[in-house]
Image (cartoon, rainbow, N blue to C red; front, top):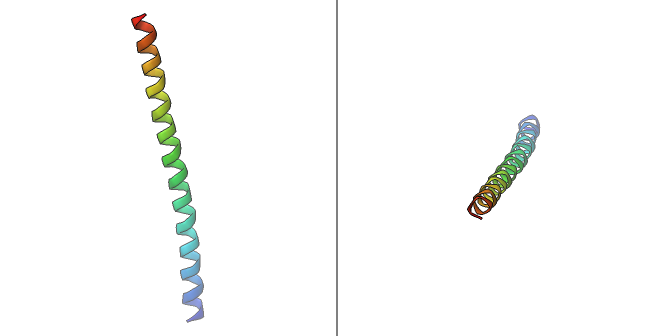
Length: 49
């Protein structure tokens, strides 16, 4: 039973690391989208002038 507990603990740790990587990836993606939107808006406003 102790072996099962240790594997469950390892799996949980792996899931936590995976969640962290997903959060970082999502944050980077959102930042990239915001940056492209900002650049596009700036390009459009400068083109109008």
